[in-house]
Length: 98
Image (cartoon, rainbow, N blue to C red; front, side, top):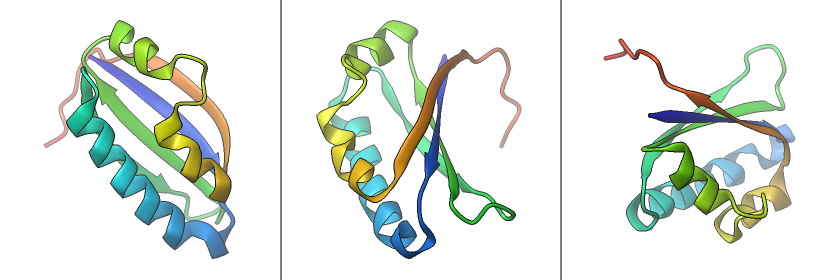
C-alpha cells in the first residue's frame, strides 16, 4: 500500500468550501480511478491555514498513473481555494489504526 501526503495552505475563509470540494473529489476519485482507496483530511490546531490530506493507493504505479503531470483535472477546483505545498508518496509498512 502507498500513502500520499498532500500539504495545503487554505485560508480559513475558504476552508468550508475546500472541504466540500475535497469530499466530492476524493469520493469521485475513489469510485472511478483504478487503485484509489480513499483519503482523509487533517487540519492543524496551531496553524489555521494548514491542511493535510492523506490518500491511500493500492500501488505506487496506480498513483503515478493518476498523478501524471502533477495537476490532475479532478484536483483543480481544490487548487482555486488553497495552495498545494507538496505531495509526497510513502510506502505503508504497518497500519494498526482501527
